[in-house]
Amino acid sequence: MLITRATEYAIRAVLYMATQPFGEIVLKKDICRTQGITPAFLTKILQPLIKGGIVGSQRGVGGGFYLMKDPASISLYDILVAEEGPLYLNQCLTEAGACERDLFCPVHGAWKDIRGEMMQMLQRYTFADLARGNN
Image (cartoon, rainbow, N blue to C red; front, side):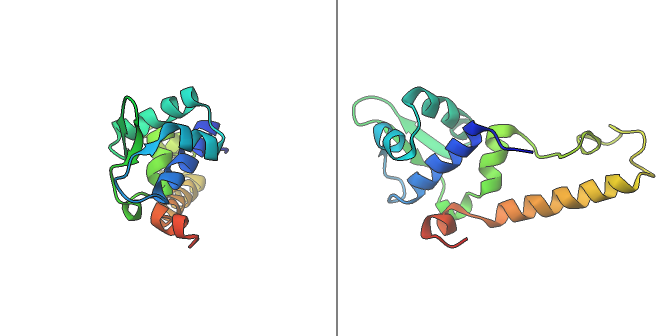
């Protein structure tokens, strides 16, 4: 499993914004320049984060993006879910009854445990910690 390039760039953009004073508008050109992201791609990848209430945007001269939440309350998990959707790992975890074998399949329980631990680990890494280099 690999995260998409869009998710990787979204993480980099949020991390860059987390290093700036909270609530300050970060110019689009500065994010693009420092993170190696084209302006059109940056706008595209931040749309799910804007919709999710993680990032805000301001148009016009001096416009850019800013974090709507404190970096301490934004985790890698939040960005991953906003960009890629729920983390399932296997089809049998998408919904109850998705797999007819889930009641007696020993692998189902393993996937469920692995998913839970992975989600907890991703939630543990906040952008405040990452911005300080505490990882």
